[in-house]
Image (cartoon, rainbow, N blue to C red; front, top):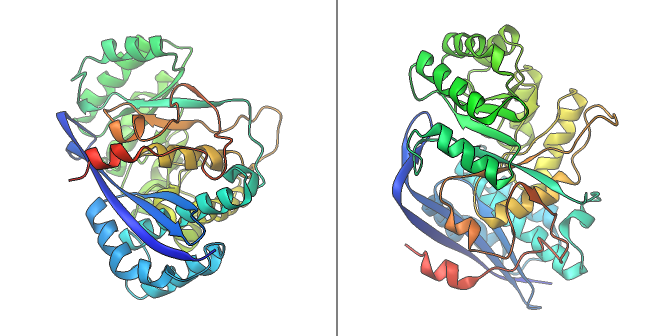
Length: 372
């Protein structure tokens, strides 16, 4: 089955109300979706993390010419060809996110060609259901500081696990925000915090100690991802599990990351780190370090579907009947590109798609409506 075209689609959703994390507010959601066509009529879909226009330019100018005419089933060889072409100038960042979107689309094609869902190709075991956790409590946004109202809304929707943004206000103010959210949610649910690398090591430690009584699930990206000394300082000083990894790329980047022992939970993103197979290679290294993997998920229905399939095949760091499958992240900011793009139902309880490939049907009219 030969590849006849690799077509990146940029989709944009302009927001009436900006929402934000520790460093900036978003007034636009944009993504680069990747469509791969073949001479047998089988079409695959993928998605790239990061700046949509940059991903599209790189795919059109560098990667698509490498792939057209090649066998779509040679996923490993095609990945190596793309990576080797960019190795001299792009071992991290956009060059890898663009490869990631292409690679996911190739898995979609492989599953459709075989008549099997991707999780079967990965050798995964699909559970009856997968829990989604609400990534919420942003700065600004539709709820604009009404933490109690947002908590009540999410609890009513059925969520039992949550993550909130920190790092964008003075430490003492963020401590008060966490206490308000924990009080509103109650003690019987999970609550994590995500600084999006907004703290120094000293600030992260002061914050972590101040909220030690709030029984946090994990503390995500407390410091800059390239400052591994800061990561290890924070991890050594706090009892809360430290999570990170969404800003790292490929097995080589994660090899060096894991060697420093910076986290208790690893969070590679398949749309960023190199794709589905690369995520599993990274998770295998993490398991050898005794560290569980909980993939980062942020994007459209394509990203969520890829994350669900991945969850079925992640290696277990330590086998035990007490272990549960990782939760799938579902951000709660407005996301029409996720909610309208396909027939995938996203919520506190989900099922792994069982149709061929990623198992979702793409509504092309959504792409057309959201073109820039």
